[in-house]
Image 1 (tube, one colour):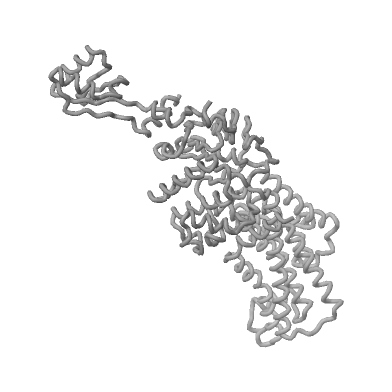
Image 2 (cartoon, chains in turn blue, purple):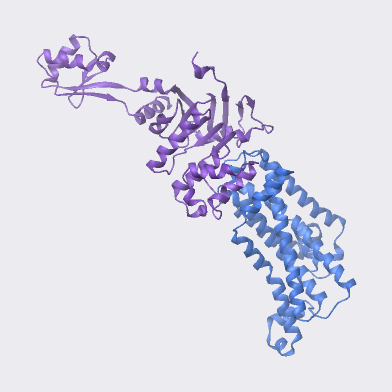
Length: 262
Length: 309
């Protein structure tokens, strides 16, 4: 356990001065800000008339100036933006060792390769959870500042529960990206994979098979694709979990057995 | 049996073979490196040096053959990684971390428990002025020093160094050479690769030459010096007549394209004064007597040329 903790400390140290870290928080933090703009537009009849496309978008989403709408928006942003931003985080955490040329220095150490990868997965989870929580906190601050009407807890708690379930699924879907990073030896291949999953998740969801395509599932669950959540079944959720588990195991297996020539 | 021969093998490879597609990176390489020995592994770029070092570090799995380090078979169960320090190819570090933070990463991953080890190696490799500088601003030479610091920090018993003097200035080269000699004197075993025989010959006890994945020659430094071509170059006022005299006295002599006398007898090479005396006596006093010793690089190129199919 001590070895694992030290491996995690080493990973934390590696990201100490990372500008990417702050870039992901800024990118992910756009969602609560956009939600705030929607609220301001909706609350102000003059602004609503002048805001054009933003107002149309808010109307199309049936957006209302209340906590239910606002948290729903954050949830949808998490499902879609999470695939992108969490994918970026995973690409960076696992691919940077090859881009920096330091991967070879991690392979013949007393800390096993499995522990080093586990430390990286831990950092990935912590980083993503920090993004998830920070968006929620930012949302609460903004919502309070905009004086959103107080909501009953029996409405807010299910919304929060949905938010964290979406986060859990989106984080799990980032696991296979680690495999693409160490197989592609850098962060271009995993970023390409992230782009493909985003495109396919939209196309497949539009064709009606999104319930069986793991990367479409968080979006459907969050309500980003309309009221499709009820179409999701046990198979859908199992597919998400299996994708995460197989991504994790494949990454460990590949790093242990593949020839490391870079 | 010499004292070195009595020591135990730290590195043992038997018929180590590795192919990447059609390219044979390692062709039945068997090497034994003794404790305290500095073994220089020499080859052109792409000869297979780095592949062998990566195999010794368990980064690449051989197709055939075995590796033993400290007498233990190299496998996923191998547990002596803290007895090994290594530097493979270009030294790389985390660009946004300082020198000390970079070392801290490996301090943690090596499970070390003496913080003085970092200060000690920073001082030894003259990185003290750079310890709080980010790695990305270091010169190539200081990057190399940082790479060496990572390899040496934990005081390993075996060092595997791939081109350790790359990028170092002359002062740095001398420092690293002395450091390696000192480590070997203290019992560390060093396996270093290079494509510069001249440099390796200054530090290694034994040299292995690899070409196209094959170990084409293995020799000690003394054997290396014995195998270098040596000849006596002589110039007189009448080289044709002087040649006849030399041949009459059973010397192996020829007239070169530069119209100089070239004598290859070991006796003449060890005692050039005999040639001077003979030629002076026969009224062909030498205007020039020069002992030519083959350049190490030429020896290396000759060795691999002899083995090129």
